[in-house]
Image 1: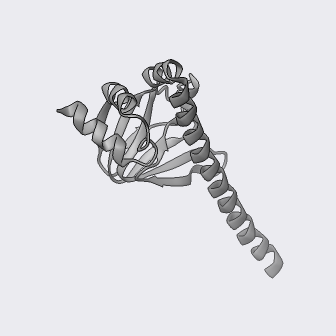
Image 2: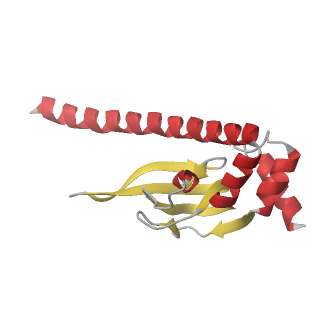
Length: 161
C-alpha cells in the first residue's frame, strides 16, 4: 500500500512523471514520504546527507553562510523541485542549509540506491541525470537574476551619491 502511494506520488511530480512503471516501482522501494513542519531544517550546510528529496507540496528555502553576512537565502523551492542533488554525485556534503518555509511533504530517495537504478537502467539514468541538469540550469539562471538584482540595487545607491 505504501509502495503504491509512493509510486503514485512519483508519477505526480514532474521530475519523475514520465519514468517507466518498473523504474517508478524500484524508486518507490528506495523511498519514503517525509513530512517537515514549517521552521524545521531538512539539512545543514556541511552536513552529510545521502538522500535526494522531491518536493510534493510546501516550500523549502536554501540558505548559505556568507562571510560578514551570516546566513543568506539564495533560493526558494516548491512542489516538483528536487533538493540535495549533491547526494547523487556520490558526495554527501551539503552545500546549503535547507529550511522549511511552510509545511512540506517530500519523497526522500536513497541516493546510493537511485544511483544503482541509474546504472542498471542506463537509459533511465540518462533521463534522471538530464532532469537534474535541467533543474540545476534553472537554479543557475535564478541565482544570476538574483545577483543582477542585488548589484542593480548597489549600483543605484552608488549613482545617487
